[in-house]
View 1 (tube, helix red, strand yellow):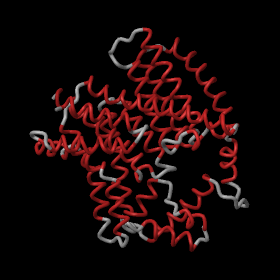
View 2 (cartoon, helix red, strand yellow):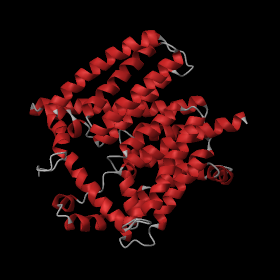
View 3 (cartoon, one colour):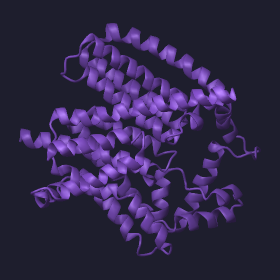
View 4 (cartoon, helix red, strand yellow):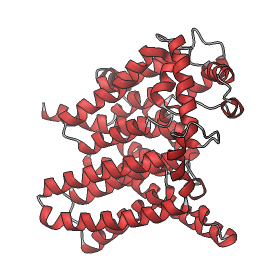
Length: 402
């Protein structure tokens, strides 16, 4: 049963960056398989005893509670369906004890999916460029057509850390051919992060990857050899990134325009200032429990109209900040639970010295500053899936040691 579960979860991990509908189908298969598993009831009791699991379930149930004072029930029910991963993965993944080999298989399946998605995006971009002769076909939305660039960037971010960790930290012995394949794959992942060009996600990727590289050098005590290679890599990456930024130079100008109060042209940076200000006004009017699970769109549009933010009304924007989004719908109570969703696993990761898990949490949390990461399936499934897998691994290892 565990082998079959490993295969299904490996398929989920592989499909996430490539084709998310396939990932959803695999999740349904996994839920059905686990529900029929002998002793499933006992495993639920075990799952509920883990704080990191329980707080994710509480976060979901808080959205259910938000139905009570919501008016827009269809939207609220659709939102609960989208967020089901917060309930399902914490309950179902602990039903299995994956060996190190099986866990590694799931993680490398995700890496393989990211590499395949990168290859597809690259081929698509080159064909588009050949037809249009427009260099903008090589960056951002036109490059990352399978996923929104932000989500693809932090998928690639985790893939790089997983692959580098497997190469350096794992006890598996690699041949020179395998090492060459790994190095080429790491370079290709970085290449994709550069051309996806999602501002926050790219900055987070540089930060977390650099932190993990230094951690690997420390573990292997190879500063003498590693630092020169790292410096050369940083210079090359910086030069390529500069070239990519020149291609999408208007995206760099947006940051400066955001500070120019006399400029009335909207862009993805200046829009966020309006969104955050208007969301905060809604929060001040409903500080404790928010407006309810289903009523965020109506509350924000009303505020956009009041503040003459016509583009927000026209495009029905969300706050583009997960903390603000959660506070709008669930108030300060929701924010507290959301923070605990990250804090409990982070404590668990630090105690277990699982730095890949910790960096995974950092990646998601920092990207939550400029995106509603936990409001769309691309972010929800990614976070819930890996959070529960990492958490389950640590808890099983602690159980075996005790």
